[in-house]
Image (cartoon, rainbow, N blue to C red; front, side, top):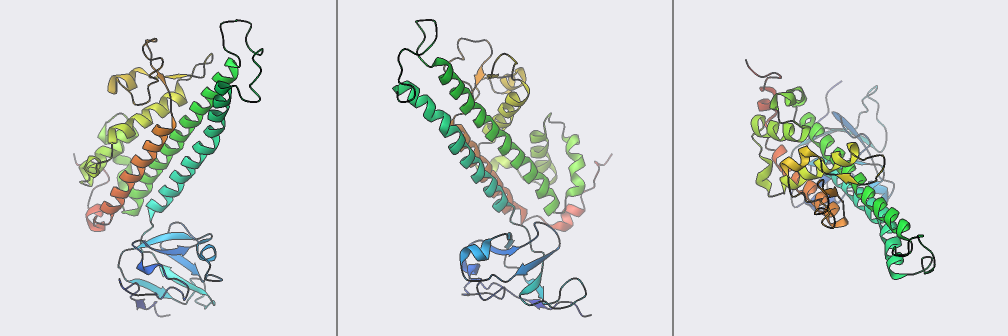
Length: 319
């Protein structure tokens, strides 16, 4: 059986392409195929049922094209038989930034919807709106405002929702870096992270990119120090909450590296030897923007990396 013929797709100024009669995205800056499988060497493309955007995009995975030639065939991988409406599309490169942005969009949605409920409860308490309009309700202590416990619970819940968003954001970035190494053919370099000796996965990846890939994260203009504080704050919330409190405090490790943390609670930090931490909306938004900007930069650099040069890097440090 002869191999699939090469077909040049996506001329820069073309109105349509060879993918399908309904695919007209080729004039956009990001060129994508919509396939069923996230990763691998071969993708199958199903012709959309109609021209409607939802029919085109539903349950498809984007693959970014970069002006390369794409090999296509009407033959199925199994048995070599044809199947109407399908093609076999050979791997270009997965648009990792698309998946990152999908996750970041969900994180923003989660915070706005979940934390928004708690912020609204606090506002109603402060404004004495229903159902918090009974001035006689409250603590047995007359100097405490009514509904103090409800306000404190809502405040803690909003804060922990923010910390949950930081946890999701950290895992998104961590997995992105792992998949990035696989995409450039550098999976064999991942075990070398421990050689970097930077005391954290974040520092080790940053040093690995600098030392082995000649990519310095700082050069894209994103606030890398803030991103590191995001991860340290996430760690403090995940590992250092106390049984008698819902407040997370800055650990010695965090405080030593960033004495004035971006997540320190300014309302209380002068009253405690340990600084309480909070995760307000503006910090969540800033963290999302930093991760997007850094990943966007790394995606641009990814396509300058030669697979041959990556394969030449030994899986172990030369002795």
